[in-house]
Figure 1 (cartoon, rainbow, N blue to C red):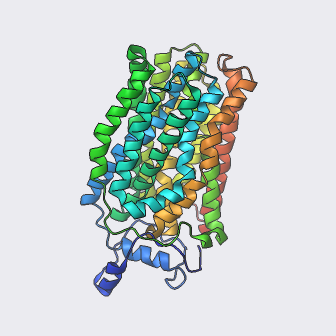
Figure 2 (tube, rainbow, N blue to C red; figure 1 turned 60 degrees about the vertical axis):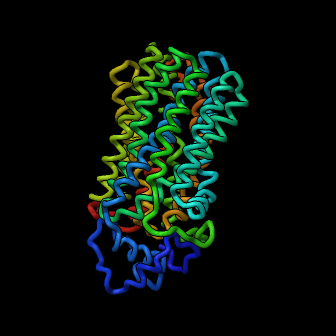
Figure 3 (tube, helix red, strand yellow; figure 1 turned 180 degrees about the horizontal axis):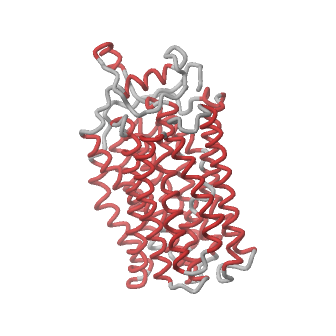
Length: 454
């Protein structure tokens, strides 16, 4: 990849360098991608190989991964359960689905907006303090949202901005930590971390629907905030770095001259547009075809559970067939499910099948991308490159679901049945197909052999 001197290295490797020949290179599954094959061409890749040679591939890493998984349970699970809250707000007449989807999209988009800044925050405060700050902001946002359930502007601030800042801090922490502890099992570690979000989304979806029906939306938010704080703070406490995280600068500008980086950056930027369309609109769509709100919540829970399974499976596949190959499969499955399965889902059975298939593919994107970044651009600059890549997701996070919402309104609204939803389905599926093409371009740029591990 980049052949110029980098401006940012995310892990201080002085102690490793001092060990010199005493360090034995481990046979890892991190793909030997042609990203600066020679150490003199790319110091960051040479530093990454040195760091990867000494990772324990276990030990305290499993404790740190478990703590990260609890964090993703809350910050990913809460965002993926927004469809239940959105459905309740639409039913109460607060606003239209298109407008309310902006609230959920805004919180996720802030992950991208603050990605490079929060990468720096992690390096200044350390992973533990950053995680504790992030989970505290999540809890605060949910409690404050309980006082804004009748105020759209208030929800934009609480469930949009404040929640988004907390999510961004948590996201950068959990994206960085696995690469410090794992080499051969890095894909599996990332899969377990992000599977927490899928499981959290499944459980939270069921609980939110039950709590809303029993206690109302305001108290539901308060219970959610308290549960987040009580379980999230201990989990954040066990997260710590294996080696000090230090860098110079926010961005490695030389990577923008690298075609490979631009392809990965563009694939992520395009691929995020369709990802939140199903979880945001499944509850509304289920009602439009005559199913109950409880069934809609159950479908969303099934989607999230399938997402958890997909994150672990794709993590394992990263270690076995390569991260780029796995990312391509994930995006193609997302595209096919949206273009072929969802438009044909007019009864509960086919819709449940779509929710499972799309959930598996959807989860694969999030667990695979950190592994792609670590393997292709080096574990020694994961925090910098991941921050750069995630920044490109901002447009898809912010506008992906609202565009679907506006298409829905333009073709008859949420209660107008399948015909009103089809344009949104085809829009989302086409974006996923475009992202799959970009991933394939990157993959075949490295090797034209179909069975090569990349």
